Length: 58
Image (tube, rainbow, N blue to C red):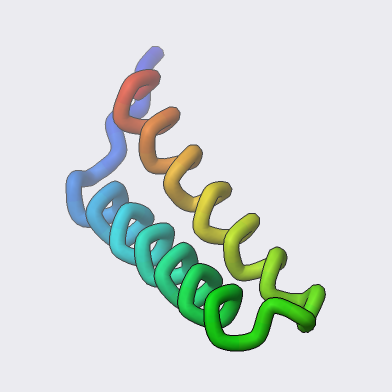
């Protein structure tokens, strides 16, 4: 049995991932001393990974 995800869900994951990565990158450039910034980058990578995994493996 295969479950297919809606394209809307995958699109949201992609948007969330890119947003978190952009926020993390901007924060890293402007304030590199804060260690919490890496959480933003990690969240972005996790969202993008989820998007790619669900797109490849329905």
